[in-house]
Amino acid sequence: QVQLVESGGGLVQAGGSLRLSCADSGRTFGSRAMGWFRQAPGKEREFVAAINWGGTTTYYDDSVRGRFTISRDNAKNTVYLQMDSLKPQDTGIYYCASTPQGTVHPGSSSWRSYDFWGQGTQVTVSS
Image (cartoon, rainbow, N blue to C red; front, top):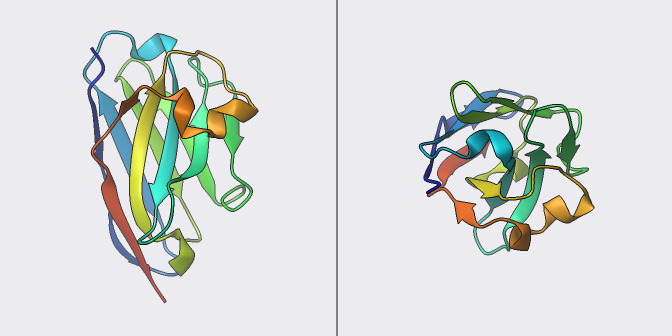
């Protein structure tokens, strides 16, 4: 069973950085690709980034490419999202998600590809 718990959210000024973590208590973490999504108030959930099972392939939304970095540590069953040069439009609840697919591809940007989700962590970027 996959159980995801996010942490690391908070309030930061524009231009600042935050590092989100997502820990998986299950036994299949190392075989699954992982993704990060976010949802701003009044908006639909949107894709942020994804990483394959081995951490060798990543995929980003254009809005965060070059500012955010997704990584994973399979020994710790944890995926990370390093967020730099934050902007007010990055504000939202950030969710990590797990998919039984091990690879990442354009379909990784669809929430329908993921079968387990964390509870979310709030990120607020002030201007």
